[in-house]
Length: 339
Image (cartoon, rainbow, N blue to C red):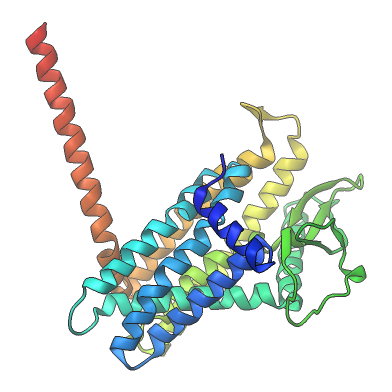
């Protein structure tokens, strides 16, 4: 059964004669432009209007990825992308209900979205940068495997998978290398990791670079307008290298596990899917949580904003937990009464 929202967006894209991927990028780009105006514009009424329109568009942009993650059975990213649209609508409503001077946390949240998306958009949209990040990620994983004593791996030819077309070597691609002028397929630019028997083990894509995790922290830190730039720079110098080093261990581990335990299976799920979609995701989220705690000590302003954003979620969770506990207590009393 096709998701109705994705179906509507797809129908609209067809009527314009463009692909679904291009439509999604247009939605995200328009939403990001409006959000940048909302964060940097000095007129609060103008900024507020731009933000109210932007939040649902950005939420929809991430929501449209959920279908892909359903196909590859990635529960963590399904939850995160599927929740983006209702979250965007909720924040848009929050913007609308604020009267008078805009809440400082809302302004930070606007900047967080802008400066976490812009770096990723730039790297993704400039093929030279895209390929450089992919190649650097593959080289780092290969170096770690060599350092750990698991040699014999090599990086294959850089490939490109365009939307609706078969993958070809980048050397055969005639597209613009400065500005991406055509939609990419699921793989995009990728570099295969080959073992000593010439077999391709995994393929490194831009998502393997941990660029998303880095940009999340970049956006959260850069958006702290009230914090001196030296404190923000210090935080970035701590976070970015740490994320990269942890990601190198993650990638090297996935390569080694995939090559070593090929016959391993859990309920029909191979070792790569388990390591990539479950074990590594849980470990990565836990590492990001620990880094956030360290940052809160360095930047208490960030902690204040994050907790204010999470307060409605915490309140709703407490209400639901209270209802469940009350329901269980009532059910227990009724059972005792009837027995």
